[in-house]
Length: 123
Image (cartoon, rainbow, N blue to C red; front, side):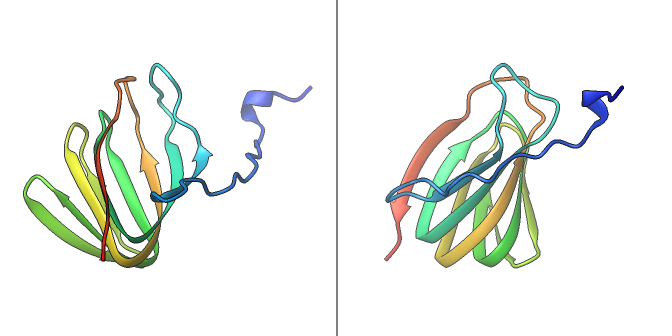
């Protein structure tokens, strides 16, 4: 007999969504009420920025392009292959002057709400 908890699980690919804001694909959804496993999202930014705050740590792995992240008064620039961490409870501003595609890993979380604080299209 097979133990389902010990078996691999395929999660089907979703489409990028976002309209005129940063495009996002849910890979592993965040669970309501908190989670111990990571939540994962793919993001695409094209000459745009957003600012948010999460109750959990956030790790952004740059797949393509150039990403800037500002948090706690410090700004870092990340290129393909770099990872930027924003700690739990910090406000983070993320922007791509031209283009960036990234894998965002969130968590774990005790279930508090995230807050979207702003969006801007860059010229």
